Image 1 (spheres, rainbow, N blue to C red):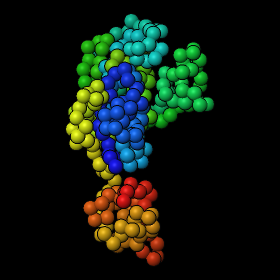
Image 2: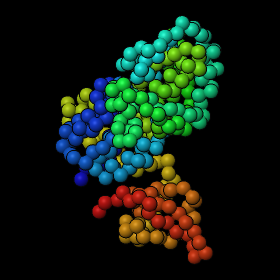
Image 3: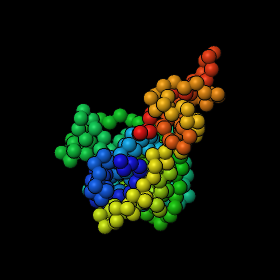
Image 4: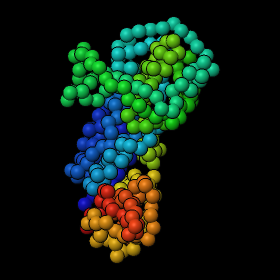
Length: 294
């Protein structure tokens, strides 16, 4: 059975679910999913999970993301991006140095309120469906992490940023909040997700080329499941542990592997993620997530 992770560069104007359907059609396979919605108005990296790799989607969603965005200052739109209606304007002009100074307040752990035009659900309804009906509901604040916030280019009123952030970060909200902090307004004029974990846009297949490509060529780009888990320490056991590991049994091992999940191999076979424990009886490993299939 075909399985693994395909790095897709989603084009502007198609949904993440549409990208999934294109992969299904191109590879003639049914068990396919994505690893977190990328807005219609955004392009960029969308890792597609195939076969048993669908089990790793939650881990990919937790990976750091990198975005390249162009912001336009002096205007706010109802969607916080170029696709919305302008609802406020400002004549405030500022220099690059002032912008850099304010950007420092938007690094590290910050608080965001998700935008109304988002796929987030409240009481079972997507916020953007409510927003299109003119309904606004209260949204809970959330903590997100901005690991780096770099100014790539500045020519007022335009600025280009490179942002590395945690899951759950809304770039449109970040830019809107930055505009407000500058005493002005701002919206996202373009947005590209350039990286998800170890998946880079330079290595991605353009979604609009999928149906033109040879199936074997697409398959050659599929990464194995463990490619998405390289941030976890690798541990290898000999083949005598295969039955215990694949059946989720507790295995006695020679050493303690720490408090974090570890990436477990038996001989050359990737089994999954295991958790270490220790007691007066020795050191142990138990599978938390098995990806191995006989």
